Image (cartoon, rainbow, N blue to C red):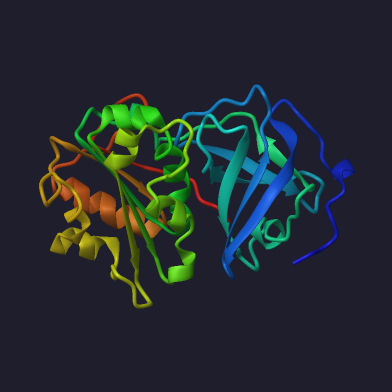
Length: 271
């Protein structure tokens, strides 16, 4: 894993980018890792937003990609979840980062996976595949989310069990979180599902919706109800397209920051 540390002299701060430092790296499995970086005192973001991060490119210009912030908005560091793409322009290098290495951080977070883009409701479903879990790790630790909804349901679909990042934390209902009250944690429901290995819940998210398993732990209706339910989608382009179409067929309308709706999607991807 250890390759030469990137020389900080290759980085240049600008009006759009700051140069931060890697403070923590964790490899979940062969194709998935997370890392934390220093957070500038002036950096503010809404839970669920993404920001540009990166490294110097071969041409000397910053090579940047959009990453959702996985840490809660009150954290002193910023955390990100990433896949490892061997031929990816950025992730082929990013996967070898070590504590102490420099990294670019964009100064303007943005995104639509925020509660501002949703109408008021009773249940909030966060449907994710792979690294799409990242923005929901920020949202699920935001006390304001629990003030808005009676239940917060985090759904994470992966191919193999070892890809269930943050599984222990979510299964513990965020035990030890400094800002969540017991009644907040009681509202959180975690639904992990695996598609290619034996696991207590198996199958794609759509299968869980269709046969009702998605709703088994909920005290509400055992189906989606447009008037009461709000849905966030984050994952592969195909996953988002399919679920958006399914929700629209059920009577849900997509929301945006300037026009809240019943479901929202994120269009930023890592490569």
